[in-house]
Length: 216
Image 1 (cartoon, rainbow, N blue to C red):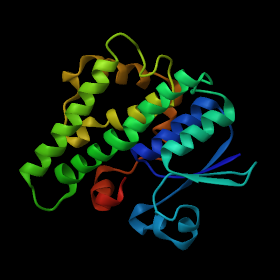
Image 2: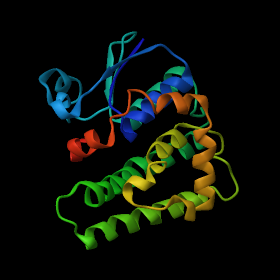
Image 3: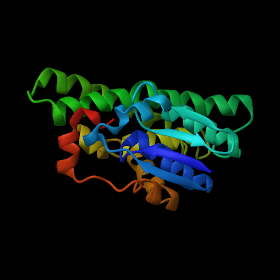
């Protein structure tokens, strides 16, 4: 059994989608940002950085934070969505790291300055939206001759999709990236994805704005 401590954010969706894809039993513990539950002593024992998601594997008593590490753990635990062959495995991992080190942070900053920051700073908005577009162009090029980022559908697709499909929230138009747009639509048709992005229940837009920069 996997215990999932999460919220309705791109990083949270990565893990709930993965859990739906691999089909193992899990229990959801929603974390309320407005009450700063992610900063509680109990939560900080699991993740000293005070961020979601976190999992606890009750079979092994392992507690893991950082969404990319969680995806790798679940892939290795079940033998799904990450190849065993070294080259193919690292094809997946490098695109996972691309999301962790680039797409997520840049979209997160675009979200802050475009949606939440009390003062509109055009230079900051343009800087981060431009970087998001550059990263999207890299993904778009990777998808020219293949349906998924590293050959077969993998944790790299789950991680990147969880952020990329929210491009509108960063103020970026996804339709200008044809291959990427098609990839987003293709993955959105998966039943596990449709279930995973509704775990836990999404807050309404007012709640999201109230939470502001706490939503990560």
